[in-house]
Image (cartoon, rainbow, N blue to C red):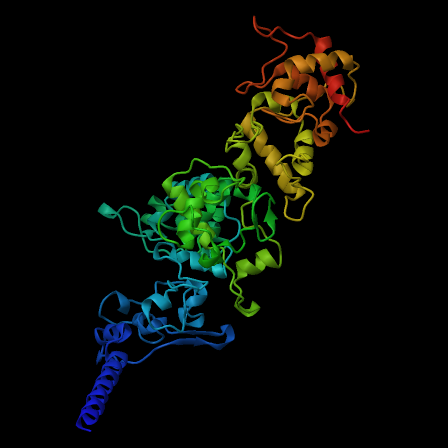
Length: 552
């Protein structure tokens, strides 16, 4: 009997001790409670309790502010370490959206790993800290962003005209210089791309300058020509308060990625649609060939460096990218996320893109070429070659430009090359508009430095050569690169209906005769001890043979 009493007594005391320990742990030892105990406001220690941000319209209830106390509504100006710091300035009140809408994670959790989503089976982990600004892509799209070359040129013009003497842009400028030269506090321009600004600023600046006898208006402001004012306006349009994301987008626009990938319905179809790539569930991703931690950011980084290693059999080539470029592309991919927020919460740029079909990329010829064409043809149109792939044409080659008319270039871009990786950019909903194709043609002329050739014979089909002789000549001189049936082995496919339809006889004749300097395509008018020259009649016979492949 006494043994039973002792057993009951000590087991009860043990259970009581466990309950007391659990109560202490739950009410006094939680990490968020310790953080709040170390935090103080103007009136002393703050009240310790669970804090949360509730946004019924978005169906959001986030308890992140229980740890990040300084980001809770009405609790700014606290002291007590990093967790007491307020939210960095953004274009809206963070409490109006909550935390997980932008940053991901598990809003109802109160433990760090759970809240950050670093647990199995949670589909939306928090965006890594170094890519935190990628969360802006949840709602924002940002329109008219140029490639990085145009972006750098625009920034150079802004600095050359001394705009930073008076204005701050992304943390730079707006300070008085040593010796008092220049400088005064003008409006901060870091967010004018989203907030807007007075479009008559230049005329008003000129009035101020003419009225001033000396000082910054005279020393730091001068007249700006119209073209440079347009460049400055394009640069200001990209100042939305997230320079890292804009820079990442400019890098994406410089590498020709849209040539294969669609975003918001615009781009090629060779690769996956990237509109929501930043929301991939890490639990559904194969990390077998990815070294390091199993996170979406790490997978995107590894895939960008070496696609075929991460996804065996991938058609995406391994571009030679720097660490900075890989990081920026990873940043940009993580920004592609779309939370189902009500239309009333949509920012202006998202409405412009999704409802009014505005372009995310700038529509100057250089940016259009970089965005859609440079991935295959090279940034300077020099052509590219990847492993297990036929080479892509050097469309900026001067010899090509000398024989290709604008009509031919427009037809090629519009109709593409069926059976090859060159899509019909003018014949699909995700392609290019006619005026954009014209701008790309204009940019190609600048790359080649060659004006549109004059056509000596306006007839499209005038060659009357011997096709049988041309067949023998083709087998001897051309089949090694172009294939015995013109299918393209180590050179472009000549047995292609789009090419044969858009190319007139003069183009084919001159291409064979001139060759392409800087490529394996030699000039067949100029002989050598190894490769004798072809006569004009023989070149015409070659063209006549190529025409036998043309559909009637």
